[in-house]
Image (tube, rainbow, N blue to C red):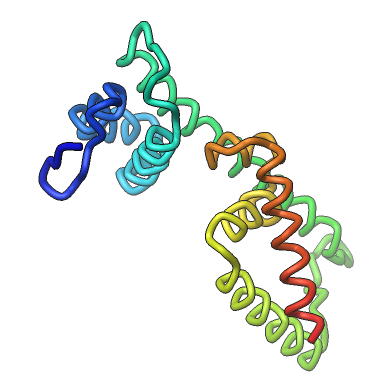
Length: 180
């Protein structure tokens, strides 16, 4: 293992070394397509995590092409997730709104119900924060971001079975924690 600044690089993974060499170019490439430097930085970090999790012994014919393809796939996965989330939000708003005379009427719960719901949400957020990191990430991606088990597995660099186990464990832990 060699150290480059603050980052330890495995000598046996040429793709990871190429990523570190080309990271600034990758960020610019992603920022130009995503329209946001912050989103590009997030995607570059996700790419790094995928690269660290892969088998370094795997032969790669064109490492540069693979690196950029992986970056684009991550960006497309994120765009699909955001589209699904927006679609889900729109459908929910349409399902719960009330219209009278062509005007949307706020259909809000009574204040005590809203306060109780806010308290349950705070408890859920705290409980998710107490989950093991992999279980928490799998739960967020699948249950909150709406990714399928397969998409969550790709995003986390895990098998579908492992994601199913993490999500199941998270749901059990959260159910137990929130029922007390």
